[in-house]
Image (tube, rainbow, N blue to C red; front, top):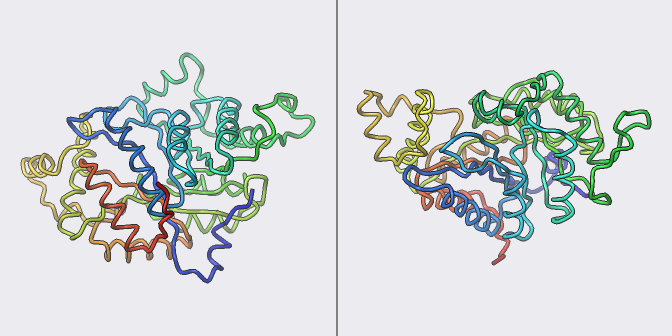
Length: 354
């Protein structure tokens, strides 16, 4: 498979950035999971037309707020309603699963949609401790320090690249005869960067989760990258929340929904994504001034010009040519509008697909 890496893109004469999407399939308060997944399909079609580079589906468990519990099921549905945008997981939480089974799932996806599949893997629980227990269903937890081993075995099965003496060398992940999906390691801290570099994977830093500046981790990944089967050159990007509206005031109002949702989750309240009106009321009752909510390092909020400036600065600081965007609002119309405004102000090239 021919891949355009960040290193190649940085040397390109084109000043443009690539923009991708991470979709958590948010469920607005008062709406259903079915509606949330219908919105995911509509958003995937829209962002492909607008020129976004890739569309990743997140994994969340035991929550009323996000409908995306099984990216391996949602990926083929999204890929089937789009034509050429890359589709993948953002990501599969590998400690819950057998690397062998994940390799078979993504070999199947790459066979069905050749040249379009990304496999992003992470080690976060993506849910409560009780949900993690349920996913294991009686099996002992896989220690965190075995994550690099899981990734190595996953790559071995995907690429049929085990050494002859490896205990799984004769166990084949099927269907065979396919190319590798792009393999990305997701992280929100420094250690994952080094693991991705050793494994020869791509690296995606989730600033939208931690709010931590991952520029140093991304630099360390590039410095220590070891060329391997997944990637021959270092390839990194950063994922950040984005809420873009016609005015900064409107964008900040829309972003209140995510702020209050997070406040609720901390209190153990999981009722979906609240409306801006509900958010304003709850913040007023709690005596929290809106000025305390900004700036938020996890999310870029503003008018199109403000968002463009912030994204370019983020990409410059990380040294990347691709930024993944995560937009969570109560209204799907506002979410769709945010992606339209962002595509326009960032100069994305429309694909012209129907």
